[in-house]
Length: 620
Image 1 (cartoon, rainbow, N blue to C red):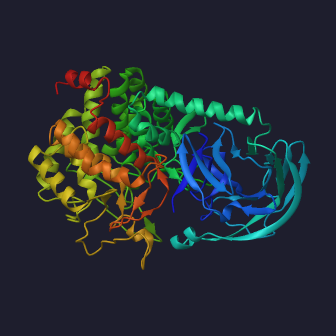
Image 2: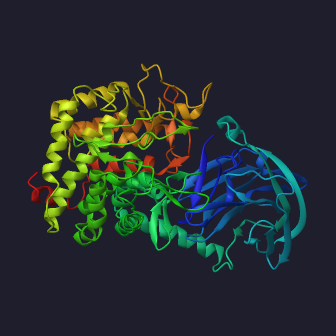
Image 3: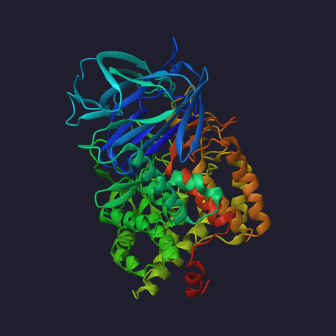
């Protein structure tokens, strides 16, 4: 069942299914980030609506509705000649969620709204007695105070009558049960708002934990609409990209005085690797250059021993550094930023961070990350993007010398060599890059996924040998890699993480196995379609006919499945076997980012403004 989501630039969100149900503990009308973008707290689970027409009362949750998306998600009900539309939005950078009700009627009706509240971390479950709720009726609404939080929830509805109540209801979340996650919860009914109407009108139901509602809800709606329209104007892309541009906006979040990117909704916080992979699609092709700069500066401040954080804890916002690739992606993303902005001042400012990354990798840093005698980067297990761990067991350990790490290492050295000439620094990277290239070419005599262990598992990681700006392998090898990946791993929704011919392959994410085993052993990832399309077109010189072929065969089929009511969200993962059922997060930053980026840059050939200039300067 499809789901919608709206966000507020803090990591908070409002999200239900297209039919208005809560099928997961992560669903809610107000899930607020208390330490942006982490510490998400469930305050409002849902609202139960009823409409009385003459002597008949109709619960909306028992009626079919039509889902539409036009800047905001809406549910439309047609009941006995009355048309009711619920539109969901949030106030930007405020923990305020609002439902706009639009009623078209020729007869008097009475609308009833019963908010269903909670007070818990969104990972957790609630049982009666673990929290209590006191109520204070105020003008135009009620203030609800949970016993386990220092926040007060205000529920406001003008020109209504509020009837207080209070009882618990047990909830069963079938989507979480299917995932093998906790799925029995209790939510609290606090009372009922009644709105008698004599004619067609619109009004707003507001949920907020802010001290004061600073603006009229109708004005908040207009401001958010205008903000979204400004984003589209700023991106200056053809209309076909509008939904992806708006979807990209949902991931950009405030983090202290800087910015970051939430990896995915509902349950991910901001991850270093995900943020950096997503950065071009989320901020560069959309021309959000200030946001890109703030993100790069922010992660640069967290660099420690040459390592960019892997993740910030959802519970306490503390960084963890267990990643080998995030730092190398950081160097690449500074270069991609330069292509769009020619901002050499930022490159100079971030140079010490990038310099420390190379030095620490060369000399050795945490988690066994070091340059070996063969100039390649060795590392401990569980540090690549295929990092799932079950107890003490890594399902795809990939320790020693994973192939994409070597690709990123060479790419980073070539970038550092290039940037050093631009900002007047000593180039101590070119010779090392040549040694890396020579050593890799000597060892890469087969399509290894991990070099030292001669792991021949057919995975998508080798595609980065082709897709990155600076490649260590010759053109013939690039073509062979693209051909084999296309034949074995490409699906309707992205690339499989393992060949179906491999005995370890899992064709479905959920089944008679731990889902974490399937996560990187067959499961399809949409974000990988980005580097694949770039690699595919790169070996074909980005010829117009090939770009058209790539769109018709790699993007259009997926977009057709999403259909007209699509809001631009792209799932985290899909099953490896047909019908490729969607799984994981309902929308993932690097899924949206890489589909948008490759569509803009590679297929439509809308390239970075200064790319040609930079390539000319370095003689390419």
